[in-house]
Length: 395
Image (cartoon, rainbow, N blue to C red; front, side, top):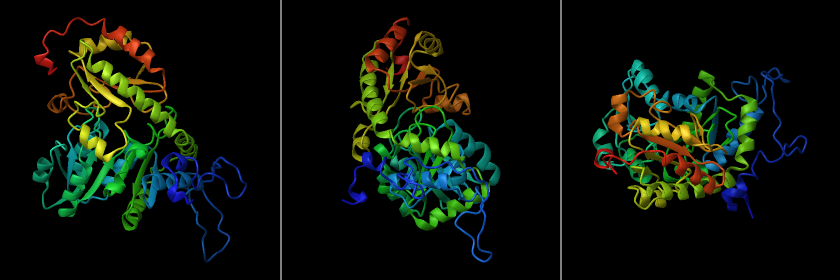
């Protein structure tokens, strides 16, 4: 039985990083060297300077490439470092079409930075393929997807967008942070560049900052590597080792977190103090069928809407289990307030236009007992007054 026949769960443990070939160690060595001696004046070795290549970082890069079904992986200092470097494949005068409710950091790089280099953009509702098609211009070079999106968990039909992009000669980028290759493998659906904040589910323990990019096309991978080497926002070796360690338990962590998220979404959708729940695992979700067709699950992140900011404050002040913090994808549940956290970089009018209201909370479900989480949220929600007007908050 070849490793090509192994399940994803097995590949997480049995890959090129399984055993150190020099010593037999079952943990990848952390190679701190910043420079490497060259034994031959005329022919240099594989490594010369750590920005260009490091054995520990390379082990992670090879592992994520294999898990995503790509040919080349690259590890960066953060998710935004990976995303920003990928955008540098663009040139002055190019145009990019972007998911409208994209992560706030991505919104900022597109609106505040790329514009300075003469790179244009259009935000669209990526769930509407016709709207995406209408936004494509002769100078459109990239269609940027985030599915499920952050924080409204909208689902983009990946094969449909890939087909559209190929018709117009565009590259497709996809942020796969929420699902990871455990649940969604975009390269198999034709996407050109897959991006991750490995800080989240891949590492999984709120103790590392990291970004990853993977390509299937060899030449595109070479181009992205040149940019990685040129900009130098590479991942440090300690952090690379932490991500490799986190990968080993990705399957069991995400499996439990997803099962708990499903139960929490069902609980919240029936709660009289909750106006709306956004989770692609609910049959009522607009992208439910598409999600089932292109992914192996809905993930472990959901959002829910309360009446207003005062209601959010009350819930946050009364929950005991989730930490109230930025980020997601950790062993502990994390409750976030997009308006002031993940999407603080987005102007208020832009947030409101996208449905990111002041009453919205995002919950990344961790590994606590789900019944304890439900009880905790129930106690906090029951501190709220009755919803005054369901019509006003789109129950």
